[in-house]
Image: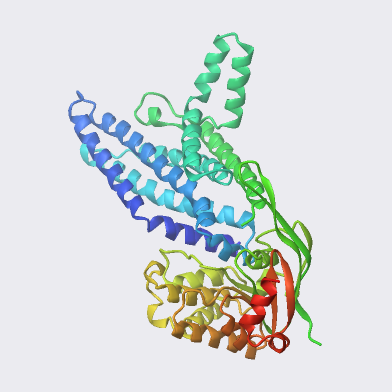
Length: 254
Length: 238
């Protein structure tokens, strides 16, 4: 536990001190502010447009941060041979993977909290009323990103950082679409297509179930019990994927 | 007779390289034993298997066959400096040593004392809060040695500890190794600098083509050739 904490703190320092992260966050804030302009050209929907556009920006830049850092974390340690320092000490592979993941979770939490609070305050100032649902939506985006980060770390134990990033983004997109694809495949009457869609649906989490952006802007109602259930499912998914990543990483030699 | 701190018995290591996964035997039956409390020199030309032997001893690589025994039992009592080490650029020297110390069971006050003591011992107290990316090659080598000693190990494995160091740096590293020896620690180091080996070691092993081609005392080697360099050449070209 002590080692996991040490690796997590070290990973947090590594990622939070990265200048590229600061550049991404600045771009995200600019994009959120850009929602003001979109709101100004929408008739009477300024707050809604800003919220919608802002949450998309938070999701997009959160995904960029989560995937690209997750893909390079393990890979960089192997490439730069800092693993020699770590694994010549009594550090387990499971502890290493868990520590790296938790450190990245902390960094992503800081980034999302910053962007989410900025959006929350901006919408409050512009519309005159605070919307706590924005913060809940950001928490749900974070839950989705946890699963994407775990999957990306898993891929990074198998292949290159670039491939892992691409696959991580693909998983996020597939997770957004898997429920719709499953529904469509049932209409098509093709057993093969339906089986394939079902496999994707089972392997990749259904992110659309926890995507509550539509609920925040009033397009749908929010079933909080269901959201809590899906969050628990995502956390269980993270644990399983990290266990698989550890199994793969245990086989590696340096 | 002293106990054995580290032994490798008939260790083989085969890796698979290239697209066709062609097998390549790096270690072809390494037999090596290092006695507790001695400074042992592991010599050999590039590609002889020195670094691989050390990695196998540490568990960074798994032997294809053969046995590795660490008297220390676990890595908690072992220190290691890799060849051409790379550290975390974004950490200061003090943060890096603190991080390494946290990987061992150590109370916070003991951790603080060890980190500050090591920074002093390797002459980096003044640069303790400087980020490692601003360290010179010699400073990195010294912080590397410090991290290898952060757990006060009984067995210290140093892979080319003198590489890239200026004469002052070499003298400092030699002083550290001598101090470790005086404190009863076991030190195994790989080196191409035979004068350092001559100065520091009693026992040496010379590796060639994945095997230990010769092992014994430095004085035995010097009885067979005018210098350690001549003896080394004789063994590796035989």
